[in-house]
Image (cartoon, rainbow, N blue to C red; front, side, top):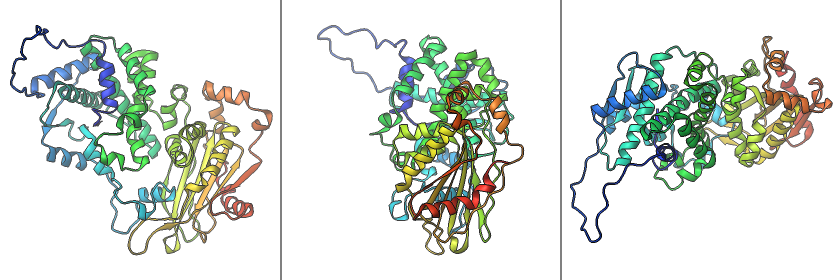
Length: 496
């Protein structure tokens, strides 16, 4: 799927990819020569041009089609209908609590009900942003059949088509994609798929300009890393994207931007044959996407069992935050660089959101970190973010779901656990981590960066996970209250 971005990152990528050469504007006019009146040109992407893009992408990305790549042009209404119809959405009845709503409410990603006016839905953002997509079910690329006003518009649509053609070639060459075990793993897999398509688009752009693939990708990476997304989207007519949750915006951008950076790093290490091998060993977490050295080292996330609901409560959502969502969670109240640094030592996590009596919610989250210093950093950053946790509600008229502002954070060695609950919520418990924990194997497969962190750690930080610390935050009236909230679940969530 390719997002809109002529005045955003796509424009920068197109400029970087095409800056190796330029198409002459025609012979210069003599001084005083009047401009010739020319009829208004129509720019269209016809069948022959589509076939040329398919051939060029196949050659640039070094993947030969195993069958013809089908492309269908649809008018705007049919394009939107097909796009939204291809989405898998969790069904929910009016007033019920979906797992997605439980997650958003449990971690306070949602504004309070009175502050949600004009908030864009995911469907509204997709309708505004998506300008092409490939459907595996139909084995077909869909692009909108729209009037193009200039050669720049035509170049953009050809670039979008190049991106989607690569998705069709992916489906032909790498058809068996394993089911992800968490949302974080699903985003990581999508980052490979979209990142590969971005690199294929870059290779196509380089071929169009007569430049080597490596040089083109290097220029695109330089532009991407140098210019923040916010600086190139501000001022666009992307009103729906601007009004979406930060979580939605950053999750949408991540597979394209960070996925492209990951695939580019792998391409530099071994060309497209090594990129192809990524489909036999998919990224397991957004951590591996953000830190390619951890992907190349095969460092997997640490597994945790789903939390167990306390008496009278039912599990509404259980999933993994991952490094990306942890960073977004922290960015609500601390500077982006502080959040990035605090989330960078992530090694695994699991959370549960529970619904109980009177539809009160409670959340338990346990996370593992590469070093005790990383765990201390998260503990401190969560403590600084206390002001950003507030009482909240789903916003239904009758029988609303609510969550309080009571949160507590506890660290024990390299494990950190946080709890959020209403004042009268009962003690939370979780099952022990699976006996197949990768705690010992992680030390053997640790990346060079993680090994250097551990080597530089003081002896006191390398001791066994035996000493716990606890931080009281918003709604916890004393350290004793914090200890009670933490201790209720700590023994069960510690690794076995």
